[in-house]
Picture 1 (cartoon, one colour):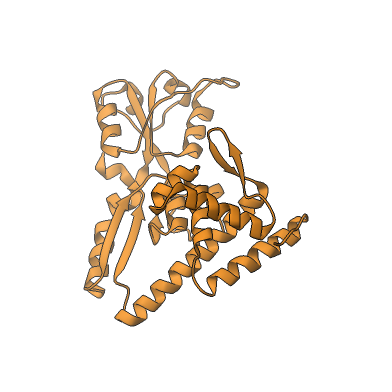
Picture 2 (cartoon, rainbow, N blue to C red):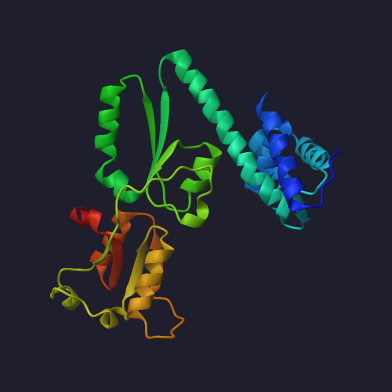
Amino acid sequence: MICYTESASLYNSIWDYLHHKLEYHIDKQLTAFLAVARNGTTTAAANHLNVAQSAVTKRIANLEHELGTALFLREYRGMSLTEAGEMFLARARLIEREYRDGKDEISAIASAGLSNLRIGAGPVFHLNWAARLIGALKQEFPDLNIDLRTLNNEEPAEQLTSGEIDVYLGMIPEEKIDNSVAAHVLIQIEHGIVMRDDDPNSQGETVDPARLKDYDWVSFVTDPVTERSIERYTLPKGSKSSLITIRTTSFATGVQLVKSGSFIMSAPLQLERFV
């Protein structure tokens, strides 16, 4: 049993433990920890791992005993991470990803190439470039199998760290990116306002933001930055109300709502041709 009280010592203990596990395999205790952290309860984790709940509970207890600290707070509605648990999770994700990438590299060597590529894409990318990209990849790598998933901004960070997807083309909020994810800026996204052609506010070259406060707004995908901008420029100073009454991840539904009546929508300019 390893007992530490100082954060630095605990950090080193966790890192040494995880590196030791990586030398051999991702062990059952680490797998159980990740499953509980992601699912919130031992019952859900057990269902995910297809094992008995008692097995998950025992593995978590053994892991906490080995580290000498509690990793979870046991609450009525489930389990939440302690400070040590948060620290452990960050490193566990790194180890899991390194282990998975290592297996992929060995598999690629054995099969003379990557056999499967899982791509997640936000709407700007999958509507504009995904088909061309996939076509080019298949030409260069004819034996490659590609799985394309269209995702909103809340999903990809978790799917990247859990290994459900290999790469994501789209926006991920900075607070959701940790050091297990490599991020590269590809394009700058600007937003415009989608409204009906016969709307009086669409006739001029510019729009007075104050004239937009009486509309019902549709927010396309989960984008808190754009939503805050909409309300900052359109609402009276100090107002705490919200103009956004509908949120959707479907671009087509947003356009149909605008077409139907009193709705307007913010959308990336790169989607203008689809309107």
